[in-house]
Image (cartoon, rainbow, N blue to C red; front, side, top):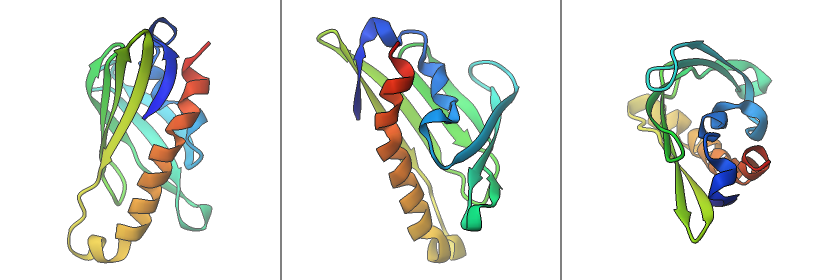
Length: 134
């Protein structure tokens, strides 16, 4: 969770969370189709030895000023995630939740790396304040 200031300063800006500026592991992001729910983004993330790994995603839910949910549709791991904005006392809090279900060989060989990456994404949420506040 990260406090992101007063509610009016972040209204209408939740969609900016797809931008790579606050996530150091993201190499590139480009919207390739759609708008709102169903929009698809091509995303490249930094993998082993710095090589680009596809991590394209689709917007699965979008409520302006409240919710942005995503599911990964390309890449070796396909997590889902949600950004939620909640207002209380004139301030707004942003919460990011991520989930990746790994089974079989992926669980054995990738669980530690995936957890480390997801922990870094959640920790980077503090950078969002700079993006969302004017």
